[in-house]
Length: 304
Image (cartoon, rainbow, N blue to C red; front, top):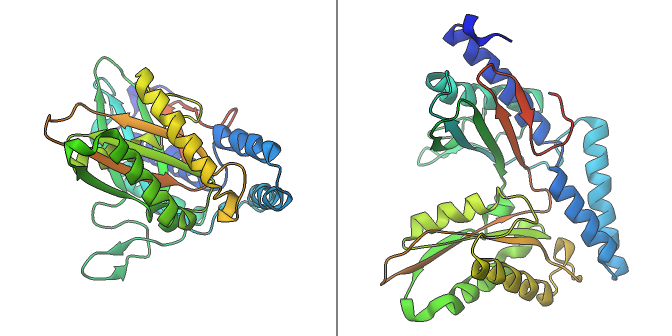
């Protein structure tokens, strides 16, 4: 497609169609890394009952594929994390295209209608509401493409989410204690095995945002700081030792991964945030080029 001949209206329509199809597909097919990790965990499980739970998960995925239906009935609130190059030619139409894509995917998938307006306590019936879909922006200098991470934030996997500022003397032990308290208290509501995202920063809102971004990372990736990577492993090993297991019904492993994202902090504060993803972790990633051709990066070989 030669984008030189596209009007802004045509470009918006094309972007809407791509992202709507991408969102629809992502509600029905888990990303490659999640499927591979669940398979690893199932094969390593010694408990016969836990293996039955994993078998049910894979049967669920197979039925979603065969019947062309979402892999979980709670399709959440759609969130887009957008990394857009400063030279991308259609920045003006991205936000409108993403909103219309949610409406289109809600009808085509279909997605459960989950957007309830605060104060009015009224479901919009469209999955579009005030500041929803939530769009998080990152500007990338020197690029002319756009990468979109789509995440469906379901009710169960959102329940353990929390952020707080610790007293500095609580240290990293306080961070670990906070994560364990949240996972052992409410982790079962998030449909284990979980993907645990942790944010460490100087204020609660930054830690919360980083914890959600941690859920976007590919399973198997590590924090770039060796100490951060070590803490990821230690928390993961500790949570596995608790024995929550698949579905919260005990087992050898309880988490698919622990991902930590961090930002420099104030000397007097140490903030921590946690976000969790369920076993049906509907996180996907697409790159759209300036000519509006695309690559789905989270699912190998997919054409929308």
